[in-house]
Image (cartoon, rainbow, N blue to C red; front, side):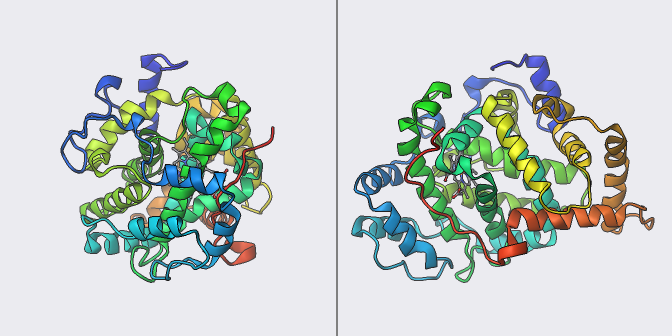
Length: 399
Ligand code: HEM
């Protein structure tokens, strides 16, 4: 546990709603994981046996630019695999481009419907909660910063959001949806990054691992996304029936699996996910030079469009969803008037929006514009009207 006493980790866990007994030895025990059996190897020692060697070969043989061009038109789950790809790459896609046998179509349909019904809260929580939390997950912040995409954060934020957007589309997992393709592209990008980043002297100078993005790292990020959002929806008392909760978890189980994490390491229940999150996510949160810079870039992006709120309000909203401790780490300047407003008016906004209170708060439209504009910003839909394509990098950030 770097820079954090156990007591601090617990208090941060309380703030994030992710508390538990911190015992790294048991953190990855497979009890409660989807298969209920022990694979024998911890996920911190698992990368991607299938995609990683393939991408070494694709990068070293200069095939990546052609793959990026060829797969630009490969978007829908039922699109035929693109032509013009190296045979090895096509064979790989044929092998992985399908839902796992344990995927439950009824749950996935319900999850997509839930994502649609709750998309405003999800955009807000993924964007300002998980997005900024990623900057205090040191391994993630350092790899994102020093990879090629770290130099163009706006583009990258939009692309990363593609993942959440495609996941939230009605029918995301159906043949006409796009999620399986997005997940497969992301898995390939991660495999490329595993080969590229170790060649970056900048990344090597700050990394505490030799190869980035292990299965454990992916599970940590899943907790910063799915598990965190699940907890916040409950904390905010948003109507969230058990069937929605189960469906939301299932969509994440399938998503994480499509990213290459072995089935046996994927949490089986939200209780197991929350326990694992308290063990492997909360205690590792800490600031880094790279993370502070990324957070500033991400929050600065929002200043480029009219969210109808000040930067001070934005800072305070981030503090509200992630804790003052995280806000202090990232140097988010205080705005105490906005802080008071967020803490009282946001719960009132939710109550009215959900029909749980007849009283429309005076700030309703301000909050409404804020959540809508954020969704647009991260989706990059406002200007282009199209989903930003995911491309495989061929190098790292220069410096
Ligand atoms: C790229 C999502 C876990 C580091 C991407 C992209 C997506 C994505 C959609 C493609 C965006 C683009 O083209 O820039 C996810 C999801 C994760 C996850 C949903 C887990 C649930 C991780 C982890 C790390 C990581 C654990 C590092 C510790 C990166 C990096 C890139 C990337 C460095 C490449 C950016 C570039 O092009 O330079 N990820 N990711 N990701 N991801 Fe992840």
